[in-house]
Amino acid sequence: MVKTKLLSLFFLLFLGACASRMKDQMKEYRTSFAAKDYKKAHELLEKSELKKDKKSILLWHLEKGTLSFAQDHLDESISHFQVSLEFIDKLFTTKLTSKASSLMINDASDDFYGSSYERSYAHYFLAKALYARYKKSGNKLDLQGARGTILAWDTYFTDLQRSASAKTLYSTDLMLKVFGGEIHEVSEIRSDKQISLQLYKDALNILNTQGGVFSVFNSKNADYIKSFEQEGKVSPELYVGTNQKDDLIDFLHYKILTLTKEIRGSEFSQIVKALKPKPEIIKKASEGSGNVVLVFEEGFIPQKVGKPFNFGIKGAINSVDNSGAKAFIATVGVEFLTYFAMNKLGMYPSQTASPGSFVFAHDVTRLAVQEAAIEFELPMIEVVPPIKRTEIFILTDKNTILHQGPLPVVSENGDIAKVVLEEDVVARYVKTGTRVAIKHILAIVAAMKVYQTLQKGNEGGDLLAKSAAMATYVGASKGIAAFEKADTRHWTTLPQALRMIELKLPPGSYKIGIAAYNEEKVPTSPTAIVGELQVKDQIKTIYTFPLQ
Image (cartoon, rainbow, N blue to C red):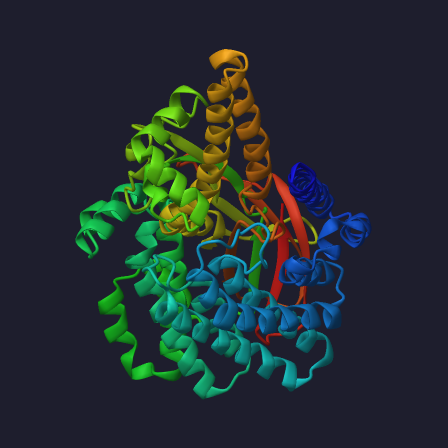
C-alpha cells in the first residue's frame, strides 16, 4: 500500500516536472521567435516536450503553423492550420461538451482544447496564409479558401454562442469583421464588396457596443463590464472612448464611405449624415479605395499564470463518493473533521486577499476564508501591458514622408484573453475547487485515522500522533498539488494586438516607420523602421508585418 502511494506520488511529481520543463522550453522558443531567429525557434520546438505530448497536439499545430508562416513556408503553415481547425471542431463539438459535465477531469492532464480566443484566431491565421499563397501563385482557389475561412470564422462564433454554458463577453471579434471585409474586397467581385460593406458596418456597431469591454477602447471598461453583467444592457455613460477608439472609428468610417460611394453611390450623402465623419475622412473616401492594406501583428499575448485560490472543504464533503471515507466522516462528524484540519493540520486559508478584479464581480473567496480551506490554481492573465497609440509613417526611398497618421488597433488579444480567462475562473471555481477539495478530504481522513490510532495506543502522546498525521497529509497534498497545477498551456506566439490601415500609394519602394504618441503629442518622425514595401500596381493587396 505504501509502495503504491509512493509510486503514485512519484508519477504525479514526474508529470509536474514535465509540465514545468515544457513551460521553460516554450519561453525560450517565444524569445527566439520574437528575435526573428526562426531557425533556432524551429530547433527548440522540434526538441520540446510539446512535440512529444499527445494531449497538446492542437497546440503543437498552432505553434508550427505560426512558425511556418514566419519562415514563408506557406504550404506547411496552411496544412498545420487546417489540421488545427479539424481538431478544434472535433474537440470543441464532442469532447469539450462531455468534459464540461465531468467533475474529476483535471485540465492540465487533459487534451489542450484552447481558449475561445485561440480557437478563434486559428481562422485568422489560416485565412492569412491562404491569401499569402494566392498572392504568390495567383491561384483563385486559395483566395476562395481564404474567403471560406472567414465564413467559417463567423460560424465558429455562432456555434460558440449556441453552445456556451455561460454567457460570454467574447461573442465576436473585430478582426473577423475588418480583416474579413478586406479579404472579400480583394476579389473585386461586386457581391463580395456588398459583403465587405456589411462587415465594416458590423464592426462599427461592435466597436460602439461590445468595444466598451476592452481597455484599449474604453477608459472605464471595468465599470462598464460590471454594469453590463448586473443590468444586462450597455451603459453608454460608462463607455468613455479612448483616442484609439477614435482612430478605429475614423478607419471604419473611411471603409464604409469608400465602399458606399463605389457600389451604392446614391446612398453616399445619406450615410455621411448618419455617420457624421470628420471632414478629412469624407475627403479621403471621396478619392476612392486604397490599393495597399497593411496589417501589423504587435508583440505576443501575455502569458497565462497559475493564480492560487482557496476553497472551503465543507462545501465539498457531500460530494465525496468514497464509501469508507463517507462512513468515517459520518462517524466523527463534519465539524470535528473541520476542526482537525484547522488545528492539527494547520489548514487555514492562505489566499485572503482579493485574487483580482473579476468580470462578474465574483466574491466566492470571501466564503472560503472563514473556514478550513484548501488551495488550488486556476489559469489567469494578471497583467496586460498597455498598447500605446501609434503613428505610422510611409517614407519614399529618399526618406521623404509621403504619409503619416494614426495606426488603428483593430483587436487587442491581451484584453480579450484577460476577459475570457476571468470568465473561465468564475465558471470553473466551484467545479475545480470541489474536485481538489475531495482529494484533500480523503487525505485528511487518512491523516485523522493515523492520528486516532496513535492516540488510542498512547504511543508518544499527542505530539507524535499529530506529527504522523501531518506527515501523512503532507505526503498526499504534495501529490495533489503536482497533479492539480493550473493548465497554463497557451498559444504563446499569438499576437497581442492587430493593427490595420489602408492607403493609396503609387507603384514604388517604400519604408514603413512608426512612433508612439507621447500622451496627446503627435510624433513628427518615426522612431523605428519596421518594414519595407514594394507596390507594383493599383490592385488592392494585403501585406502583413510583425511588430515587435
